[in-house]
Figure 1: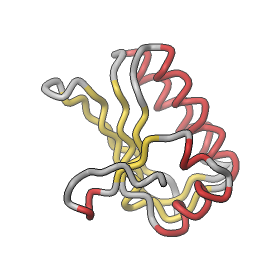
Figure 2: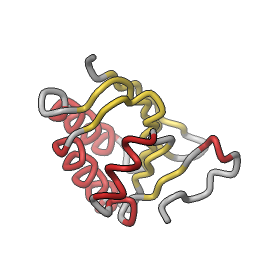
Figure 3: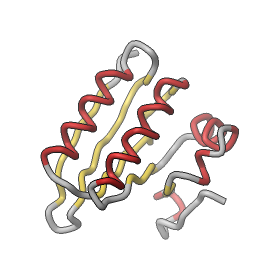
Figure 4: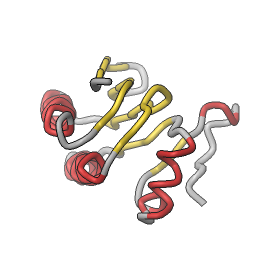
Length: 116
């Protein structure tokens, strides 16, 4: 399955909202990197990546997320990972990136940080 990214800027919340679906691997990660960088270059704002329909990520995808998070911080914003599936959350925990990224799970109903 290919990667699909759908983005929109929420002016009221002053943030980019990106819905990711499919898989991010060595073949699709560069496209993801370029898309996310272009959004932040267009408008300095927080970036929320909804991973609810993301089925798979590999180490190249983790690199893109780290790079994107750093870019957002340089612009004075934050990157938020929303709705990571169980497998993605496990990978974030194994790599300790759950301590680096702000992670939200909408299913909890309160948007609480789930990075503990």
